[in-house]
Length: 141
Image 1: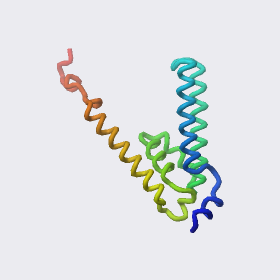
Image 2: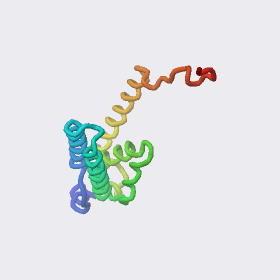
Image 3: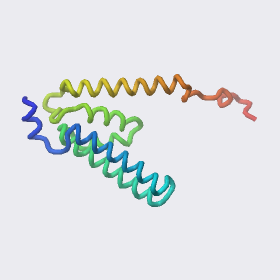
Image 4: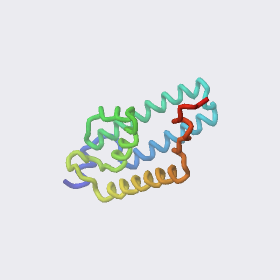
């Protein structure tokens, strides 16, 4: 199946639009926090709006990939948002027809996995996950 056939048959947003939409949501959240403050009522309303916008963006991308839109609710599971983001950024339009990533999708997925590995390495290197020993002792007082 040709790439042009896949692009024309699938509605929704493609990889670039999905990536730029996520960047726009992040920028909007940063601007809203800097204007309203993190604990304001207005920030609560903005964050609910951005959550709905992000969910709608995921639904449109799932439609483009050719999967059920109900997969968008994976984002509410622990680490589900990360897995969903990896898949939606890497899959080409019409992925459901071929079930294989194209060369750009493989490159994107490998780059994302390397970046996640670097973040995990840095977290353990700088002991961000280190738990103090006294938490596990019985003589806390």
